[in-house]
Length: 259
Image (cartoon, rainbow, N blue to C red; front, side, top):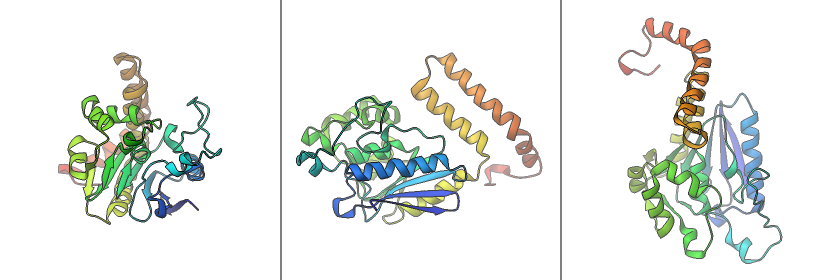
């Protein structure tokens, strides 16, 4: 299997398993990633997913050996509404949080897969970058769409135009890495973060998440974004706010303590 999934309670880990190729994605791996994320999205008992690479690297991008061979298996659907991206799940949107555990290299299409996640937990020695710049391979898995939204146009263009490597500290300063952790600790820390997120009242958290994405990518105006926010918020008000207020009144969560 090029993709290995494991359950940790309500958390699903999705591991790219081609360590001999630094987890570069070929068409079979792309298809397996789509299947894994489809199953995650459909399973209502799962609250979050962690995407990671097995064997020391997150993902070195699309496997250029497939391109070099002129393989007929390389077929790209140009209509983003009709099929998956070359890297697999890059055109997908999720109703639940996804966290990327980044170790080793997360470059080219591998960086684009990391951008698919809500949050990125990055190991100290990890390297990120648009390395495909060197070989005339374009970003067609969301890199030019998500990266400017995450870190701003100026910094995104610095990475997109130069293709230079970015270490974990600079990634953190850019806002590309949400957490920097010791080498070898990325997956464990990402799972712990997913569990922490999953402990919150889910209607409220998922509604706020959906509203943030809508505002960033889909809203036609400020009023449209605000309307979407209140519509989502009303669901939480009706389902979770009273019980949450009662818990707070009973002494939970005072002075910022964890629930």
